[in-house]
Length: 59
Image (cartoon, rainbow, N blue to C red; front, side):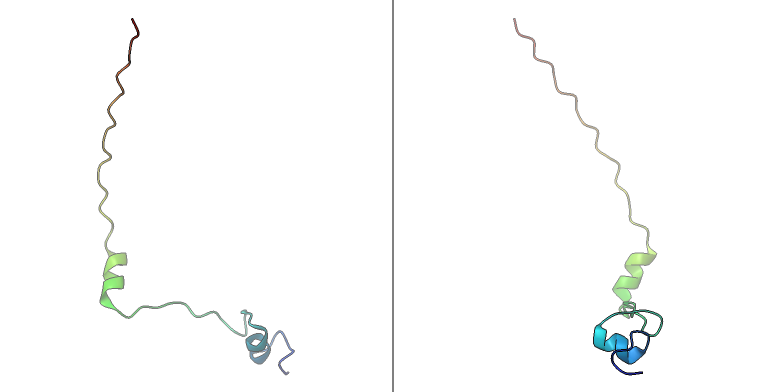
């Protein structure tokens, strides 16, 4: 099981692929700001009503 073996960890590192033998690392932030931002639901602002365009009449 050397570098050419696609199923081993060493082979996956040399090829640069991920799979069962080599899982892709998930990004985990340790800071407090990222956790607080995801925990709170974003406040939705009410949509502004669009004014209807006045019709121009040609005389």
